Length: 103
Image (cartoon, rainbow, N blue to C red; front, side, top):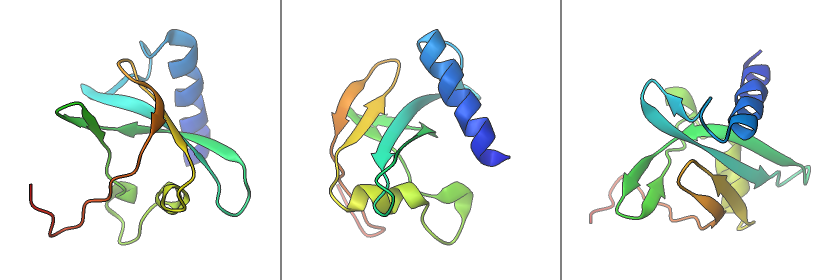
């Protein structure tokens, strides 16, 4: 059921240019497209983000689960990822920040 909801959100986001699905409870949403490290299939997921200067910050939290979501492992392989948001479009680069990271 969860993946079906993601597919509907991605579809509505794309056809509306982000007007539908571009925010989740007033928090901005972007579409992250990764390539499966095992399957080679492209997958697109809606993710909430925050801005840190000009950087888009997403969190690999799997809704607060104890393990990382699948897309986290896909982007760790160094494959190119694509991000589409109402204010962003293009390739993205992973910058992993650990729990002990200080600015």
